[in-house]
Length: 290
Length: 344
Image (cartoon, rainbow over all chains, first blue to last red; front, side, top):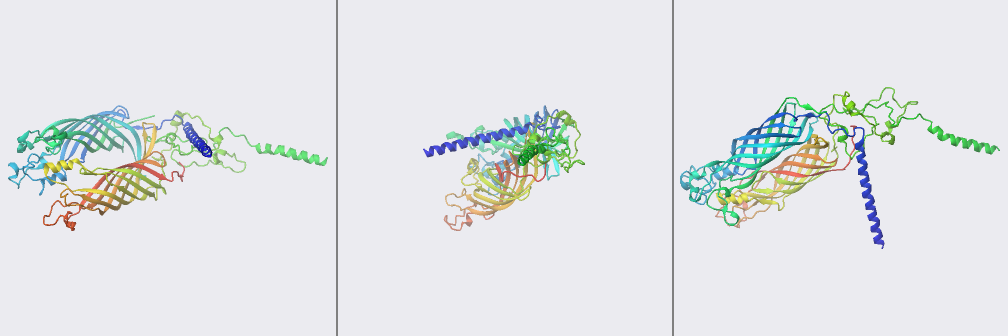
């Protein structure tokens, strides 16, 4: 009986506390009904985007590459319908393609053996199977690379603010997300079947086009009305055969080599890029909100 | 009879006493005489500035509309000449107790007219920092995701504890527990099978660092032009230890490795987005750098597999390693409340 009473009292106290807390929260709301009730959060906002065209030269670097890194140079062209919505196109061409440490190891001294076991996977000497071991063909040459990239996209800018650096420098900034469809030109090892995959010419690259979704998030800084700069993270998920290996196609779930190189050897990769850009907006002066 | 007079005088005095207390000049409703009050905070002149109410935080009591207001520049209002509270002066209770009930009454303001008023050109971009960090502790639980190792992912839960000596400088400790979360990628196997070449791989067990944090940047964002949230960005760096051991891939039948404790240096850059004055979301990229011991890619057949001299198991050279992590977590500041030294 006593326990029940204690429980009842505690429950009542809990309810009272909860109700009290709720009452306090409601009371806080009343603070927002002061003299500037209904005022906008931001006044006299420089509308850096609304009604302006922007051209932004861009340099992009691929991330977490297994065999080859790509540097793309390009630009984003966009028209900002409102301050928070823009339509545009982003494009770039691969201007540099650098091998990774792993690729160098495979090609380097004590690297991958050029013999029967690797004949289908690693470019051997132009003469068959390492008969000329002093001048083996380069594995780097068979690794895939990005050639170009074009993406119509929609940019959404939900956040707009400003930044103080060292309490001395103040810049307006915004954060945006962009999404679209990317058309990606790649070069990867051409398809080959059975014994032809040992031939030196089978390691040549062919051009392919991939279509993939793309999305990114970025920060823009506005040191002046005309010029902005920023950085962006971008994802481009799609499947491709980065190494040129025959690694799949046979056995359970196709997880074993099938002695031919084709689309079954492509593996999914969440390709990532980080970009930096400088933007120029037209007209050169932004509108200002009320 | 004499006693009756005394009682009557006493009764009269008691009746008159409260009337004397009421005998003050009647105050206008709202109680703001305006003697020392400057115009209410006008819309900020900086076109990037935000109006005060939207920036208001529920943690803080609302400023009284009738209270002495400050110009947009954040300076304190100066009393008008003669507006003193000396004897005979017109005393305004709202100057003394701005939160008095009669001072809390709302007053309608024509926003259009207020917006057209001239304002001081000098406006701080962020007039009062949303969060005072000085002399507060920060507890930061997070989860770290590997950014740069396509061979083995070293994801880990972690915890940072910082003490802010000043508003921009903190000292603290942080640690990661990798435990069993190291994950050897499929890609390693595919590569070994296809190219007959193995890449030495390492597991991490734990790491801990003594760090200094510097916060050079802070700002605020308006979300959808409606609500406002605050953020700051920081850099940190320090020194500590990390425990690693090779995963035997070259000669897994004969080699097994113990944990090695290695000195590391770490640097990071982070972004903290505040939900309120004591809770924030944290996003940080941190690079833990150290000279790692890796498995020897060569096997020396002349030595027994169980050779206690494990020097032959290890590569004779140390390898500089970067463990770049993306850390996502929460930041809790204690104590949860604070007082501003200067007015807004």
